[in-house]
Image (cartoon, rainbow, N blue to C red; front, side):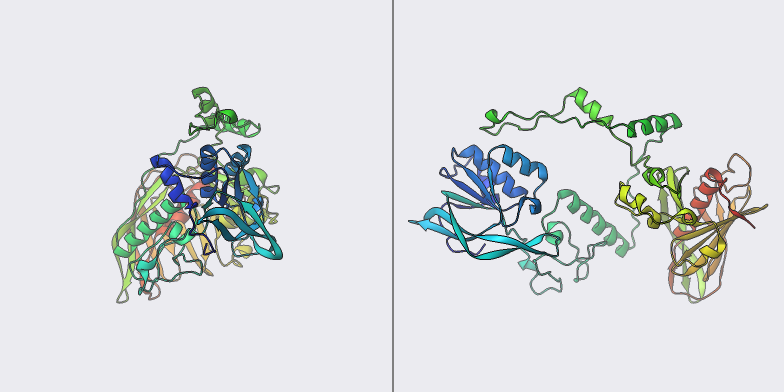
Length: 480
């Protein structure tokens, strides 16, 4: 913290303190303990200190409880256990007596404008200094990663000492150097660090030209009866099954405070699951104009050839994998949407369905005015065509009824693709089901281009067309 007296006897770093307690080493706290900080480490330190001393334990925080970064449950348990929270107080100096902690001098704060993290900045109030008597002070703030090993490199650091890295690839300014977790994010969770590691691994594989295939996850496919039952469950509010907590009078030691659920309670809690990863449809349910529709597909894994242009010639070399595991998909019909925002408000995945989901236009004139994420479907006596606009450019894919080939065309090339599968049941006027491969039967370059062209776009168009033509064939698609 770089304040006067912090080198005195009785001043502890929170992590060092917790490690000593965990190892069973003696820690002299006296009877009055102050914990400085508002994060989870501060809460852990305060609750641990409460079990080691008979006197008061106080958490000193420079903002208010509402701005504390600790998990709300941790804050609540701290207060339940009789620990005091001293809000709007910043440490100014540690008062020592014969080299040992005697008190902490603080200055009172008021909250100013919000900073970059969204929390209001504490502003010291001149002349508001006060003292809190203490025998020990535990510092649970100012923990920063040691990045001194990066001196002399081209890795950039932010003002707060964290490493500047690309949010999607975790690539830093140094070639072949990736970073993630707390060293990039600041204090965060192990889940976020794991996610960064995965993003970095995928980026490294792409740089090395290695194919990354995520582990196959078998999602449960709900039957119609299960979906009806699940909708009934969603219509009822069931209270959470909470684990029993150790009574306060028994919390003098380090026995487990929160017990595990009983088998009966665990099964009851599991029954509250709304199966959002398999069956969401929230944006469908809350749309007053019925602009969001569900359509179903079979899980798809396609091996797509990689098309590249070399010396003004098209070549197909290598493969990439296109995968869709979830059987229920959402299409947004833009013609019906008035952008009320309901789907965004209630989205369980922090999304904006009216913008994020594939946007289908029923009128060609409206479709042609769009720049991105726009689809238009036509059907005729011979087959179906789906058109797509991305980046202001249009592509189209056509499939004949009962056929096993698709014709894709954009401003760069024209490709005839063979799809391995079987005709769908029903009217006989829809694309084939369940392709395992996209095989190029013929291709023609319309305009010279550099690099590779991915067939993931045509594959997405094919899957959407297949789903719409089988699940939502009642929509008023224009006839070709």
